Length: 183
Image 1 (cartoon, one colour):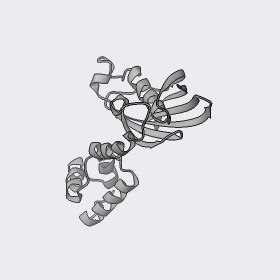
Image 2: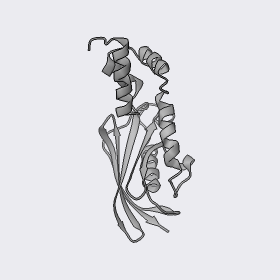
Image 3: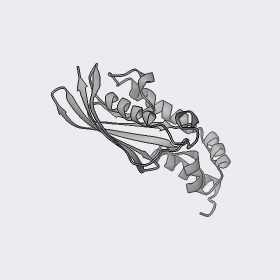
């Protein structure tokens, strides 16, 4: 990509952030054809906070909607939530979540992300996992950012059927079908 004049780059930068507030500095760097340092300087000049701050701002609004869990019990950052319908969360993995030798993230972190999101989308004071059907598609490496999407597919009495799909850079890595029971 040819270098854009600064004003054009800034306009495109803002357009990209508005289209996807969770776009990484690395992705912006690649799209705009500049260094990550330039992206950071542009963010500062435009008054756009870093990704982590943008995620936390959006998550703060959604945590107030959750009835089944406390904020600190949700694994990942809750970035979208419609009770009894759907939700999205993000989790940045790190070395502490992975096996030392392989750098593969331990499955219980991935499952906990899916289960806590499935609980968060339910509009009830108390809910538990009744049934969980899981499939790990490919290993997740330390440093990968996980994106989980939950969808309530059916409500039958006190049973909520929730499907959760987790991806890394749009590649499926995990899927689960839960039957959550409200008490």
